[in-house]
Image (cartoon, rainbow, N blue to C red; front, side):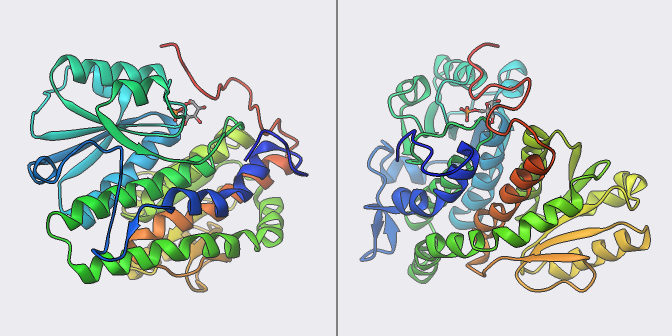
Length: 364
Ligand code: G6P
């Protein structure tokens, strides 16, 4: 991949479409079918050390923080290690207890974000083991961490992260699978996840083939006063990232909430001019999510669902192919990148360089 626009009008559009190849690249050479696991050459964490990990704490900013939320869920689900993500700046300013049995992971596209780098340096000073999940090879965070996983998304130029976001989520799935297989994850589950990972590039291509439909939806929702994004558990980080992306690139105000939190406050905002985007994977929370759609409908809210099957309560459903439930957050974010892109296009925004933002914030 190069900096050439390759016939696209914006880097964002180009990078959204590069995801098919980018995901293929992050997987390439890493899958070990014989043992239903993956090899991560740069991890620098042997099996004994990995078995000694009691907690995982993931740190990053912006979209990188959101991939950390997905990563934490994957690590909990596949490796059964308690894991969470926190914005890097918050972490470093609250004088955190640095625990020797916790594995810290810094996530960054550029590898140069000051807040994330400063968190790494603070952790290192206090003797922690810190890994990096980084895109830019040889960047400051890649150099200062003890090891890690390169994301191999290729150069990302648009300020708004798309292909790097997806590849980072896949990199976390690989890490979670690796940690799981040296702890408690069965061969059968390892195989199942590997098969799911292999399906991703073609499924991403399938989502991208629906672009015209999403463009029409974007035109329909572009004049919203504000947009609400909701999801439960696996759907929640997807909702957060989609909300951030829409804000960044289209300047449409958006909020993201866990679906169950709607009734504790944000439901007051629901009206026809404030549509909701609901992320509804076909997992054991689907019924609960449908109940949320009913609550929204009862307040005359419009609903755009992202789901694996048509949702009758929604005004529109964007269908996403089914994969293993653990991998749902990876695919479900992709149509919402297109939604943000086409909303920004409809509103005439400067897509690759949104006002007030920088690709990489290297100062405090
Ligand atoms: C900036 C960008 C965001 C990005 C964040 C973290 O704020 O505008 O799009 O997610 O930095 O960047 P990083 O390079 O650390 O992933």
